[in-house]
Image (tube, rainbow, N blue to C red):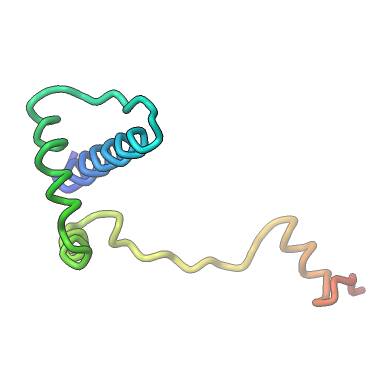
Length: 99
């Protein structure tokens, strides 16, 4: 797995876990189970609090500097195909069929 993909997956997972833990605490529910170990300690106790304190502009700059799927642009869609397209082409704007 490429480094930036590993980084993105781990950061997403631990930020989600932190948000779930926060919501559970707010609503008096049990917190989600979490992984244990030195790497988990880094993500939970160091990365997540620091990331949350960064200003949005700095976060965005870091994210955009990293290669990955978040930088792909949406592709334009072609004309609709299939049954819906043929049904739609027989209708006018008023919703009545044309001959």
